[in-house]
Figure 1 (cartoon, rainbow, N blue to C red):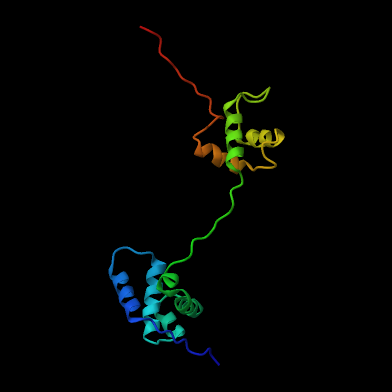
Figure 2: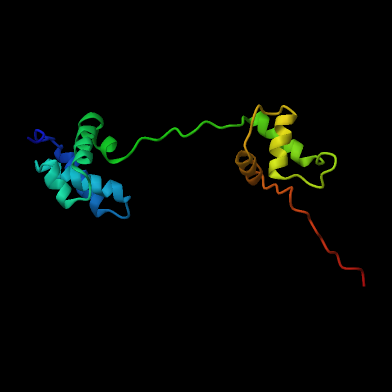
Length: 158
């Protein structure tokens, strides 16, 4: 025994907006597929029937229909902004690490390396812990490459 059919009433204005969207220029593929599925739902087609024509699963089509009912056309077609991960370092910690890198390297070292910066930042209690990749990205954003030795060859005066 299958699921009960999904009855979604797509407003005429929304159907017209979907057709306009499909005729307009470049769109994301997922938005186009969702628009096509919503138009099929407006024609009272079942999710498995739509899934045979459009490369979406019946479950995804049902979720799309429910999202349309709850959040409207924009909520069904487009995804919400995702929060992403919190930043590991705050602005003060970043500034202190950058200042450390701009100073001379520790005794016995010729230059800073990413690993050395991470170790020294923890040792100097600038941060409780930090990974090498975080340091690498921080230095990259500030266009710092302390591990490179600048070899400038200047020609003699003629």
